[in-house]
Image 1 (spheres, rainbow, N blue to C red):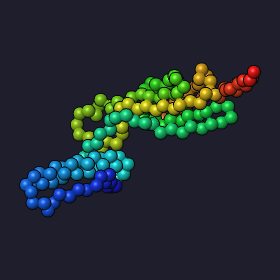
Image 2 (image 1 turned 120 degrees about the vertical axis):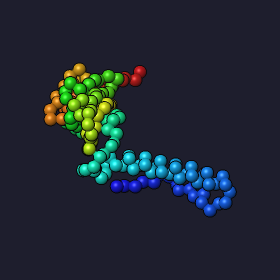
Image 3 (image 1 turned 90 degrees about the horizontal axis):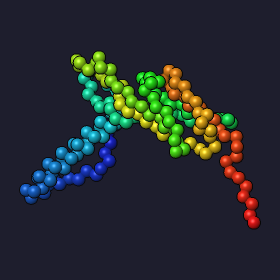
Image 4 (image 1 turned 30 degrees about the vertical axis):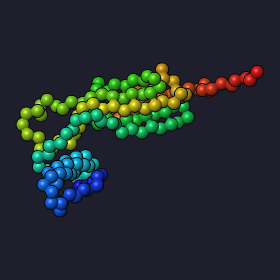
Length: 167
């Protein structure tokens, strides 16, 4: 597991004043809290436990990973949404951006009993992609297959600017 210290350790040990003992206790509690915070944060990226009773928060906003490719005639966005159904995805275009969002919920049948490992994530997900000006937003099409949302965004053939004559 990665251990990260994003703060400077301050030691007040060795001072004889009684108030310093209270400060030492408070800094100790603060240090432990920050260490737990970083341990929990990095646990999701390293050392996935395969056994034992794992209690971890799998809620919160998720940001789906994606690829954006540009061809001669279109842009293609591929968003990775494993464990999501087509009905759980919202896809909108407004204000010059493509919005991918939705929410997944935990299966009700597993609410009872003990969970020993819980690595799947539940809750809201969202991703926003700013679109270039040279696209036909009215011709955007999408398909969802095997956990991958593919969005095709055709390019506009018309030039995006115009020549201005100076008088």
